[in-house]
Length: 159
Length: 321
Image 1 (cartoon, rainbow over the protein chains, first blue to last red):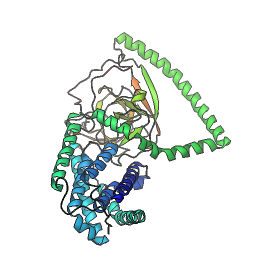
Image 2 (tube, chains in turn orange, yellow; image 1 turned 45 degrees about the vertical axis):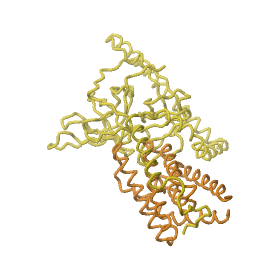
Image 3 (spheres, chains in turn green, yellow; image 1 turned 135 degrees about the horizontal axis):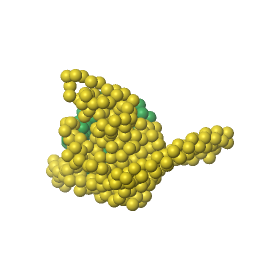
Image 4 (cartoon, rainbow over the protein chains, first blue to last red; image 1 turned 30 degrees about the vertical axis):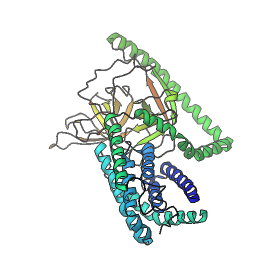
């Protein structure tokens, strides 16, 4: 279908944008709260174009994060994979939820993600145990409605 | 609510079922982690991939570079002139100090020649710039803009004008990653400059604090003692300043004192660092005690138990130019 290619392009653009956002320098007080934008995009695309943004897509996105900032290859890839799996598993339900309920689900997914990353950190070395570590979960959750609104608008405009 | 694009999944699944795909990819990630972490087989791949993403770094870097260029071009003459006077002033004092230092080096060489312990200092340095990339707020790693094209190698010591900054953990062609001495997976073997007591300064994850957990309560250390590198790891050459002791707490009930130090290098401020090549032919291994400093690579299970410490991966000293 003609839509497949254009939404593929949109996915690629959003991924590159999110990767840049992941490494760009932020002021110190915002740095610890930097939201996992790429993960939100992966969840969004898994819901909206599940055929293109499958598990392999999520895994590759996680792998890209590993290359940029991971202590070990496969850490974020595994965490992204788990989140994408859960999203795909419950996509039919998730998609029709009203936005607040969806946000709650995203919060759960983010907690799972952070936990997996934290857990693997603990296996490979001394993990950082400060509570600040969970701050990105909160900021990412708050960002979810914004992400949905923005990408939905973009999708509709291009459709 | 997420709008569904027209290419929704068919109800009858295509390809292998979700669970199977999940399983295959999960096994792939675990294999990757084991290979990378336990075996270290992916060094070359990592370096290659890092090179592949370097355009991304360039994109992120470009607005800052543009700004630097603009401010550099349009900075006014007065400011440049004051800066110039100030710098020549500093240069003059530094020259005078250097004169004395030259004499001392010469004397040191003579004395060492007498003692037949050649620990010559044949060193070459290269200035590298820290790239404005945030890797992780909790891991003290930074990227620099010099890579294997400039001869940077893994475990190379990195300094700034005030002391030891850290060491190189991974190199690709256009850049390298540095672990700072304050990272909680890093430790430096040090010596108290005043009396030569040897110990290990471990990073804490706090950029202003190092911890020295292996000093007994009887050890002769006190606040404001200067810590210099002892060179026992074969990575950091001996005698470079590392930190200043800030706190010593002795609890008679404990074996070890609680000792903390402040890194001398401006870990959070310097934009420019010095890469150091030590002429290893001149530097004979100085009484290396492998048992005393077990070796770990950065990223290997960095030990929390006080038995296994060490600077990340001191390999046997390799000859460098």
